[in-house]
Length: 102
Image 1 (cartoon, rainbow, N blue to C red):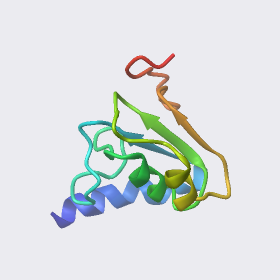
Image 2: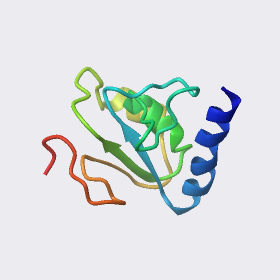
Image 3: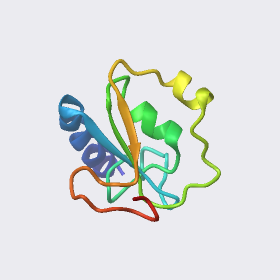
C-alpha cells in the first residue's frame, strides 16, 4: 500500500508547478490509497479534485458522467484558488474528448 501512495504523490509534486491536471470519473476513488487524480486513478468527486489543486490553478478533467456531483458555490468556495481553474471534458494533455463533452 505504501508503494501506491508513493506513486500517487510523485506526479502531483511535479505537476503542481506547471498547472496541474486533475481527473475525475464515476469509477474514481477519493481515498488516497486508490485515487490520486491521474488519468489512470482519477478522483470520484469535484471536491477531491479541487483539494488536489492545493489552492493553485489547473484543470479538472471530467472523464464521464459524474451526475450527483455538483459544482456549485459550496464546492468552489471551500476550495478557493489564487489562479484560474478550468473544468472541462477535454484532456489538455492528449486532446481526448470524454463523454459527450464538445
